[in-house]
Image (cartoon, rainbow, N blue to C red; front, top):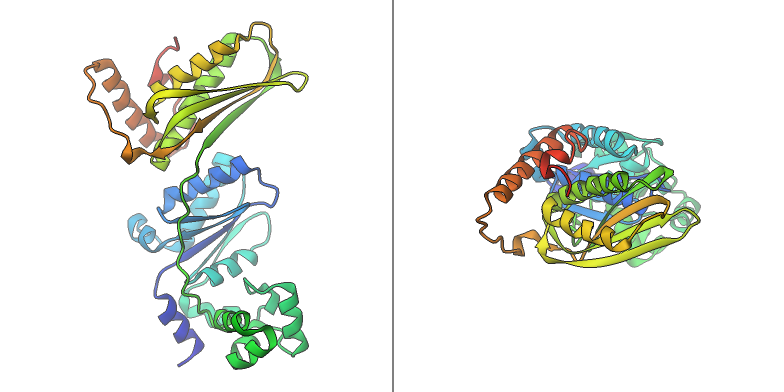
Length: 338
């Protein structure tokens, strides 16, 4: 049995995507990249601080396209929506996908390796390029005369174990052959979600501040609904000229991800700040104590106006998902702010 055949038997036809963000990406932007990934597949494994894995087996059928195309769609979305380019590797296993993303030159690109290509593609790579091989392991292999992945794959596993140690040698020998049965393991949903705005000029304008807060409410609500989460609390942070800040948290009457509920609580928070003559440089809104939206009981409402707003909210979500977050403004959902 050839190494390529072993790899195909071990991995089947499932495709795995490994995504690398820029090294200095802020945590909030990294979270937003994870949200873009969740739009492609429900099985996403965060690898903080800058990487992630995506299981594409079901996503390929759902989207009716190939893995390379999904990687290109991801890049377009992260660049256009977040201003961040990513390096994307696709392969039949985690090791192959992560090795592929490591071979993509910065700032970004997509490299897809099919199961049939694994052996020929891995073979010429230097041993240190194989995902999971550290500098000391690579040095030990080179001292033994193994300088590329193809040679590592040809060395008997027992010999690799003597060079690198039992478990490390066994893993290295398997992964050099493209064998890696590990599944993508989705991480728990984040415990909070944060959105923020900075003002190019210090602002005293209450209307401008409330408009920015309304934008944040709509952005935060859309993000929570995409995640399938609801917030039990909101935290408002105000940054002032001179470096000082103000922060307060308020509980919602009931867990919610609806813009109207978030807006009411957010406005109560900013009313409590008593801004008056404060010169603001930035504003942030964070959803706290998040829960699975499926666990939140939706109360039957006799308020026809509210029901109409919730229907409009669903339509707006579909428009934003299809055309981007800036396709429509918050006024379409909430009407004139009170």
